[in-house]
Image 1 (cartoon, rainbow, N blue to C red):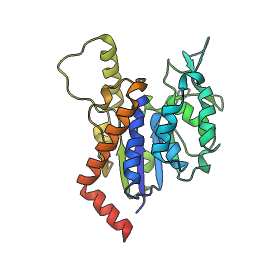
Image 2 (cartoon, rainbow, N blue to C red):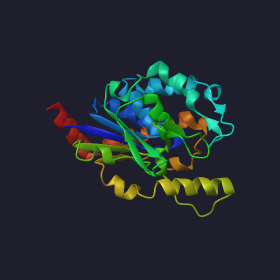
Image 3 (cartoon, helix red, strand yellow):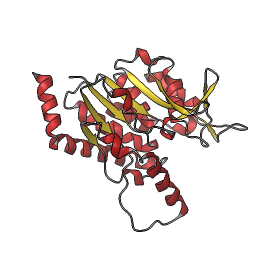
Image 4 (cartoon, rainbow, N blue to C red):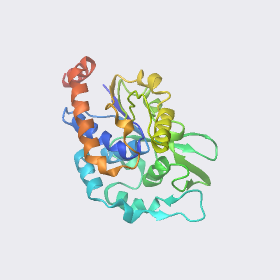
Length: 258
């Protein structure tokens, strides 16, 4: 059976995907296709390149991202993230089609106002486009058009997997718990943003045979790198628990063995 996995966007919360992928790898599962938005595109690219999820996590932990970030004076964003390409070049191939596992990167074509999927072409350029939060990062130009974060229009790109694989695993890192009150405008805006990107998750989750969604992950700030290790292990444990309780996953593994 062909198995695909979709990885949501979520800023630093995307480290959760590495914990999920690490747990799944221990089962011996093989993916025939990966799709991802923003942080999910990064995690997906490293996995598709054949790099162990735990190693990817270690790379993130030892990398001082601040060294690669530059102000974007006089442009449509506060920060230029393109220098982070120096990190990716060390570990990733130049083009998407050179990856060991097929990968679809979801972005938003800001010029045309629609979702754009990349399955070939410059890998790092597509990753940057998928991660480019409007207003924070300078838009990425490709072929004369502006591209920004795929999460603007599609934070959980399950569509490229439909009718292409037999079994779909979803990994999302934006779950919100119920609350009775909100303290502070920052938390108010953060929760509003998460609710916006989660608006179609109920519908999309029905497309997945297995959903892994660590509880309360959406309460962690998009840029809170201090929570990286907590995010990784919470997601890893949630993945193990979900896998263990899933009858459909047991059937999948049995079918692959036979």
